[in-house]
Structure formats: C-alpha cells, structure tokens
Length: 50
Image 1 (cartoon, rainbow, N blue to C red):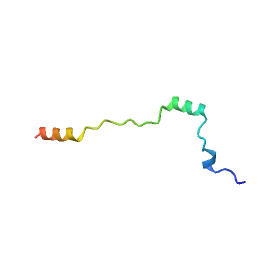
Image 2: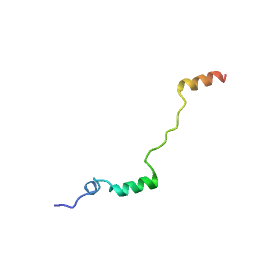
Image 3: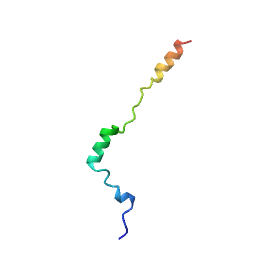
Image 4: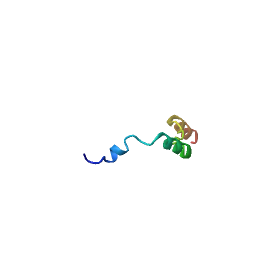
C-alpha cells in the first residue's frame, strides 16, 4: 500500500484544541466589508454638485 498523500494526511483538518488556540490567537477568518454608497446616492450627489 503506498504512503498517504497530502490530501489524505490533512483531510481531517486541525485538531479541535489547535483550531481553538488559533481562533483565540488570530481571530476568525473574516474580511470586513466596507459599506459602499448606493449608485442612486452617488448620482444624486453628482447632480447636486453641479
């Protein structure tokens, strides 16, 4: 039987304890989105600036 490849070795992911430690240390893996100004408001601002 051939040795397991990378996909088989890491298929289970991190142990719960390591995942919890990293979550505590680095926080969640979420990128904050900035709120965009709606198109209608940008058009209105452009018309007002004339």
